[in-house]
Picture (spheres, helix red, strand yellow):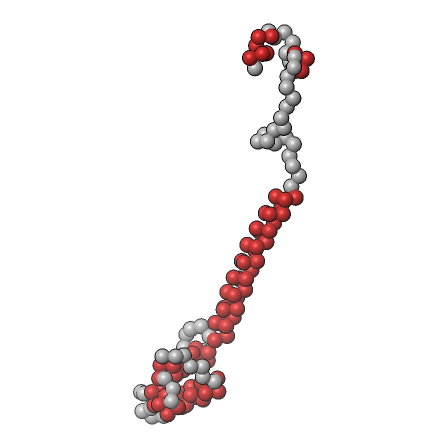
Length: 136
């Protein structure tokens, strides 16, 4: 069955008719079905409209239409903000890596050192045998 979008005026009128029919003596039972048949509506849809109208008026406990609308807006805003945060985090990580100065003391990527040519090129070699220095 296809979903029909009924105008708000029709919904309000149907709810008023059901509430008026319930106030009549003996009219409580089957009021939704009678009004739905008169207006050519689905009885289940009309029951939902009446229940929501009672919630909005404070007669029945539940989430009001205004609260449900506000909740949906806030959930949409949270989704958008989370998405924006994820984009900003990835962008900041990208630019932080790009703008970081190269580290000269990095232990992972050492610059190639010049070849050792003799004792004078080594630090702290005084008094050590030459054979030990050549094996290193």
